[in-house]
Length: 498
Ligand code: DUC
Ligand code: ZN
Ligand code: ZN
Figure (tube, rainbow, N blue to C red):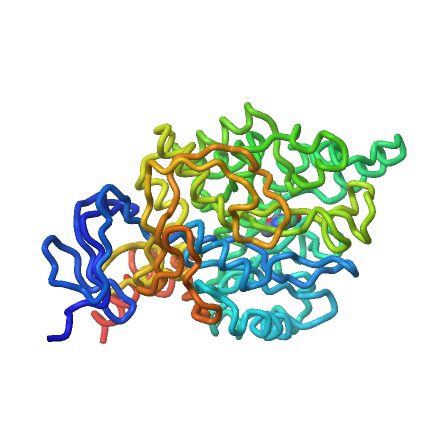
């Protein structure tokens, strides 16, 4: 007789964003098809006694093989090493960025990015877009058609010369997001403050990596965050503020929430575990250069508070991989350069979940269900991938991370699976690590071995996220504008009128 299931995971403690339950999981055809005790035998049986069984992580902000503006620079991870590292840290879906190059088309960027991903990924992936040149063609033709085809989120930058948009351009992009149902992600730092401070620091001879943090103070993040919120309010469309670093931006987001504005917020492990002092120590500080920069211990505590009290919607890695040694990463051309020429970003796709689990869940700062929500369910919802991704439910993809919650690990770069030659978390001790990762029912990481194959990961077109919709107005809530209702409700309303 054929077994009823391809895989059965037994005896684990299963947690989703809302429930924690003792149940077995039956998997067939890559999906969860049964939850309950005493399921019939599966072709593969996994004994999860003493383990936690969680939805695989969704890392909704990571950078793999992104073409670099500056000649000679290269990201260390492509879709193979990046998704391998993701799988080994319990992440089963990644959303990196197809970046438009100024003067070129958005469609070309997306097509190029598909070629880069083709045949390489071990876990499933979707794409965000990065809009750097919102021409009339991009705004009126390319973005609407790309959004309709499943690229339903885009990032805009308020800083970096080769990426930044001015306020008018941001408004134009937000209007497209509103009209076509996409979610705009905003990198909020005031570019002119940074440029001026950089000049001042440089003329005083302050060019070492640690001055990166002084060139990007919290006030520059606070001002841009407030402005992004105001622009979102003006257009009446939700936005996500990415990589929020500390108190001042958080205050602005709390203010927005207090005024009923739908502003989502993301933070990353670097703002919970690193401080600006990690940029000290000579050129080695370049390893921890990212933007916004890590702040201080007091700000770490405020970010933790924002996680526990619900200010933050998601936690992403912002994995931006550059090698320290060599010529194409943190030492461009093999040289120790001034801080403003050091590529921004730190690696973290593999350590995101264990760090947050260990210091968040085990210490009681966040509950296990909050952990799942912040790292899997909410990002899947925010980007139109739920309920296929981000939960363990009948009919969802069997993307599952089985955790040993007691496993003690000292993080070293040699145990990680990215292609970067350092980790900023070297020597940190964590308790809890994913011991088995399944993507659509296939084991890709097990007992310390990578068993997934390149090319197994599938591209995921994203739906238009309900969370990207403007708040339902009083008139809409009264049923006058069915088009403004969340998707499920408007479907019901349409069938009721049919
Ligand atoms: N912003 C990111 O989102 N990632 C890396 C660098 C940056 O500025
Ligand atoms: Zn950014
Ligand atoms: Zn990023």
